[in-house]
Image (cartoon, rainbow, N blue to C red; front, side):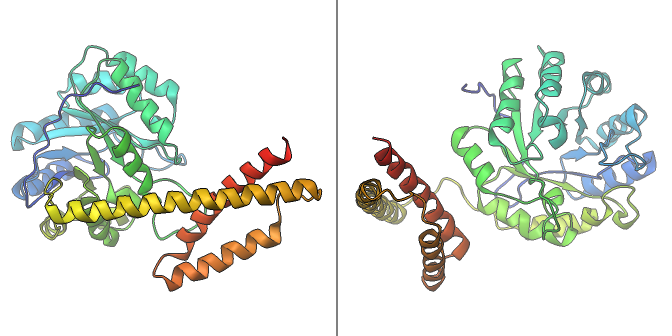
Length: 354
């Protein structure tokens, strides 16, 4: 399905990216207004705060609910900033619309549930409001695109995606693994879709926000959504991944914003070299598969199993070491040869069953 999208006006310039900022949770009216005023002074144009907070376990602070929505309305009236919050149910959406919320976002747990997304799409039919969809908690691009398609099918054309990383088991450097290849593939499939990076949730640590934000800018993301709190160490939720408005301003000011569109004859020549090398790679792979098919024929004639684990391990280990010596990541090289081996096995299986 091809999405029918309208442009979302993202306030940004060549020196500073588009940024949505504000606390993880709307804790008190004073906390919301203090943070909002500080961010407005730093030039922030869109204020975020969680009103409903889905927690992994019961007992934690789950937000103030509808009682916090008038605080966001006051932020809008007093600072001129647009306001946005997370929604997960049709009731949330009705309450937000009644309080003049300018933009909605759908969280990772909700985007993983097609029933919830469809219910949200149904209630939004005929309503012209921008909606941002976070990636599902599991690394499934089809589920992410499916959520976008459901909303677009309901007539929502001002859509954007938020990359907040993907859950994994066990302790990691990041709270949620970036898996940059997934938003990159999303950009390839839907090039007109704005993609915003959420370094707060990817890193889970305020010290990781700056490098993750720079990575997102280097990859051509359209903006950032960053958690900022007037007193982050006292925050009622996710304190460790929030920064003060001053710290946020330093992070944003320090980013290198690269031009997406400048192209010269030099880069065209380099791309031509890449195309030529890719052609050579395809020819080499084709030759390798021809040899693999001959091996498959030999195995068939001598009643040998297709899979030879010792040989497979030997290839992976040897090429991994060789990749490191050539300045490449050994894990990347092993993944390449795992894919090559998988295709080799498939072709040999065809020979065996002929």
